[in-house]
Image (cartoon, rainbow, N blue to C red):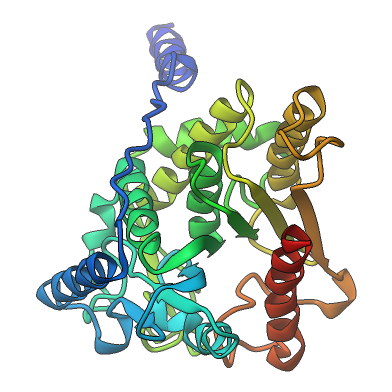
Length: 340
């Protein structure tokens, strides 16, 4: 009898831990814009010096491709979870050759020389938001109009910036992390709560090969602490909570999805996007009478059978000769459409 009472007590404790009110916070964005090109360059150099002090791998130091002056458009490229700025290097050069200044910053605790570092366990949603604000502030000195692309975890950050920053002109949210593909949509919110409650532990991207994963590029981490993943999910929860109450503040938002997505949940990303569309329909933005003209979707067809990472050169199964031009054109088309 006493064992049944003890088991019931443990079950009750588990239910209370999981279902008690969860404070995710809804922190505000704080901007301090760079007013000119020289100030922006100084900001980039300060980030690069900090990267070196943090022992970032050489290819993972914050990158800037600039034309020696402020350009009409600056393109910010935010790398994904456990990788670093080198992920976007090839694509960044192509945006640069199109006449843009290109800014590829390193996210906090990413890209360190020690690929088995446990530094990522320190990452918080607050760190990500502060990093995003800083990057966007610097970018204003590099271009008259600011375009931002983020993939996976940084896609979630891009969504938070789109929700909170009216000075963001164009946002491209690629395969954002609002849920995991293998988690049913009806279980996603509960899974997020559990992920934030559980003790931290380390996960390998490939449990078989672990640190020797042959598909893990040399500058990316072969695994991650679950708390870091939980903080990206928490940032997604914050964006979703904000979007339920208010329209996004960025001017033009494009959601880019891989219809064969194996890792993150397209359903959750679309559910988030539909919240924004609902606000646009009910309160059209000035100069946008149909209420949806500045919300766009781009889909990579399921038949392409693309993996989650469609950015890193050399990723098995990714035809870069097809993917990169489509990403370049997606940005160019939206720029041209708004210019008209």
